Structure formats: C-alpha cells, structure tokens
View 1 (cartoon, one colour):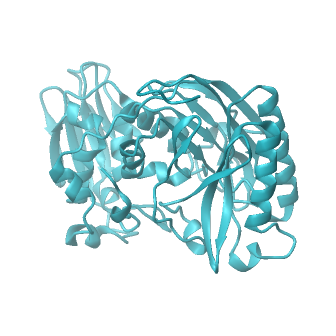
View 2: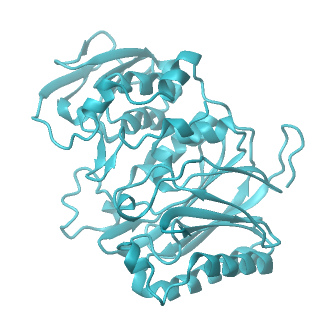
Length: 427
C-alpha cells in the first residue's frame, strides 16, 4: 500500500498472539514466532505484529540471566526475523530485547517484505519490572514503509497519552503495538493470589484504553499480546485489531495462541487538540507540585462522598476542577489539571464515549465525575465505574478514598509522574 496525498489503500493486518513462555523455554518461542509468520503469509497478510519481547521472554529476570550462553543475542535474532519476513514477503514487527553495549532496551524491530530492517523502536514508558533491567528509550518512533507511516507503541507506552499524541503529530497513519498486557486483577474479582477464572484476568488496555486512543487520534491499532502465565506474571491475551473510529474489528482469545486477521484502513492521524500553553506545560520539566506527589506509594486514607447529577455535584474536600465535556475528548486539558494537582474533574455535558471518560481517569489516576445526556458516572483512578445512574436526573454516588488520586503509581515500580519523559514529546 502506498500513500498518495491523504489517501491510503486498505491493508490486510494480522496480530500474532503467543503463549507465554519463560526464559528457560525461549527456544519454543522461536518456533511459535515462525509458525505465526507462516500462517500470516498463508492468509495473505501485508503486516504481522508479534508481542513485546516475543523472544526470549518478557520477564528476563535480570541482565546476567538474559546474557546466558544458550540464548540468541540480538544480532542473531534479528537475522532470523529478517529471513522470516523475506520468506513470507510481509512487513513484520516483533518485540525483542536490544543490546547496546552494556545497556538493554525493550524494543520492537520493524522489517519490510524484503527482510530489510527499517528501524528499531524503544519502549519509552517502562512498566514495573522493566525498570530493573531495561533503559527507557529517548525517541518516539514513526517509520516510513510501503504501508505508509507506521508508529510504534510498546505496551505501557499506550498509558502515557503524550506518546500516542507524538506519533499522531509525526504523521502516523497506523499504530502497531507489540505488548505483554499483565493481569492486574479485575476490581471485585478477589486477590490475584487466589484461584480465579480466566474471565477474571484484567488489564485496562484491551478493556477500554486502546479503543479510546484510536478514537481520539483517528488512527487504527494492531496490538499483539501474550496469553497465559510467565511466573510471576500472567498475561490477559485479547490481542486487538481496532479501526480508526475505535471499533474493535477482531479480538483474540483470553487464553492460547491465535492469529487474528482483518482488513484495516490506515488514516492520516488527527493531531492532538492542544493549545500552545498546554503544549508548553506538557513538555515542561516537573513542577514542585508534581515532584511532591511523584514517588508516593502510601498516604493516609481520605474518605469522601463524591456524587453527580444534572443539578448537583459533591466534591468532598478534594482538589477539584471542571471541564466542558468537549474538552474531555482530548487528553490535554485533563492532563494539565492533573499535573497541577487536581484529584477530581467534573465533566459537564460529557460525551457518551465512556471509554474516553475512563481513559481520562486512568491515564492521570484521578476521579472523574461525568454528566452525559443519558446518565451520570463516578469513575475511579483505575478507570473503573464506581457508580452510574439510570437517567441524567438521578444521582450517581460513591464513597471513595481521595488519597488514591495522589498515589501516581500504577504498580510499586511504575510511577506515572516520575517516569514522564517530556523532552521526547512533540505536540
């Protein structure tokens, strides 16, 4: 497919979902990759995306463990992937561990159908154990291909809206996401250490976040995940093909290997709706307010009642702000308010796009009170709907702990504010 002005031709896109394997079974991961490449070629895919760290494993345990003699080094792995892409005559995007001197990066290799390495993208927003052995990338990557301009996100990169906004600003017409969506536990499903069913596996990205990103920037996503346990982690599967309107075209299973394939139409991405003042704020170094909150892992509970209806809003003793619903369609306004310390945002005349409202809460770890034409919502910092009314006149009310909005850690080793890399953003 070639780009002609703003027009794109539909491509056949595939996401290859692999069964999770630990470092001791890395050789089996190579077989999985080869099998999915062959099947994608059989189904005449133009593009195949494979998961994050598809080889040797996502949880590499440490630099010394990764460097053991029985594992392929990056150069040897890239050579194998190159030959697979050339044999299958397709574009291939595969998550790899990239060695640069003594430094390891969580990267994605992008190949053309001749097997030529177009480029390497490095994960910018590191997730939890990533921080123990990977360095963060200093670039947000878009590549020119025969499929048009392709932007690359790696897993948790999607949680920082500035990263997708930067891909859009650089003209990405399609976003690919090698990922390893870790189970964080569905709210109300019990402890992660207790026996649970596969349906209890949960991650916000396949639930609502990728849908919201696609819709906000008007660009399709191809997301390839792992499924099953890789101790101490468990992946949720559900690889996705999502169109530029945010509609799920194909969803992989929660468990097991799968190849999902569909026709996708790349689009010229919509740049973020960001004012000059907001762009300067979002690309600034952290302020004193942000620095004071970043790093917090525990605060004394602050129990409050939050409620919203058409005629009344209760904020408790929170730091709060209000936005018109149209401003919630873009990440920038809510992001700036959160960076300035807001715990609660009230969205008046909010859109019925609940996925986007949940994204605004989760990407900032704040509470959102939303009033739409049909209902009222209280949304928690993890994006969960704590209360929902059946009509706009009825009240949605929830008892919450406001201190949750001051803890900007997704996990003990994933700090939302401290890990922002504003010098990489182009808005």
